Image (cartoon, rainbow, N blue to C red; front, side, top):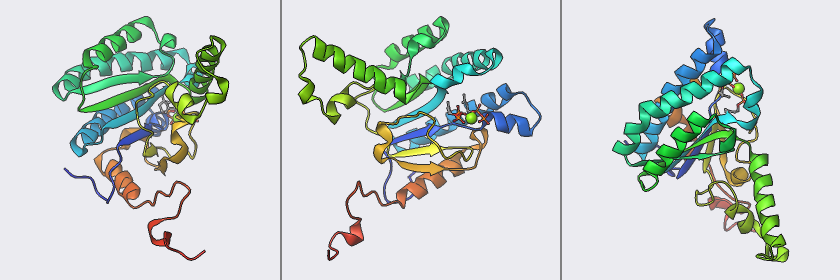
Length: 246
Ligand code: IPE
Ligand code: IPE
Ligand code: MG
């Protein structure tokens, strides 16, 4: 399979939204929507593998999502464990590295242990990376980076005057991962909801009204096609305007 368009993203990040609305439309409990969403996860992981997209970050649970009813939160944690158990053989088979970003200490101990075990077991794989954002909040990530930099300065290891953008980037949760080229949000909401605020500085954004449990191959290919047609200028001039008269 080959990706449509002239440019293929190296890193795609997805805000997987709309599970609750999908379930509500059917008169089903919200957890049914989350369960159906797990199938969309399997689908996009496979597509990224087939298309050679090396990094896929999925916003699975935000720092703010803990305020949801206990039954939904515990159902999501159960589903996460089930997904990891169900898919671990796929990670090994395809040499896919699993990583997480976020406040791991917030997660229930059995989930944390399972994640740590699979992260270690897949740490040396290099065919691609699946990065799950769990109890993730970008402001928390940036505050943690600021704390770590301040602590190093206080210990005399670092001159505050030498702190640059690269210093901040080096103290984020996954500093070796390139910024996302493309951020997809399903369910039509036009916001980032505290996702990758630093890393998204020059990401291309793609919002689709499709609810996450319905998001499958045609929807992902449509996002890639849209991305392929974008002109990424990073503040400069686009291809046709490069030689424009000023
Ligand atoms: C996204 O779907 C999944 C999580 C945030 C865990 P939602 O549960 O937010 O679905 P809606 O937005 O209520 O439809
Ligand atoms: C964002 O979705 C978080 C995840 C997809 C995990 P939310 O449903 O929590 O976002 P808001 O509350 O609509 O901004
Ligand atoms: Mg939502």
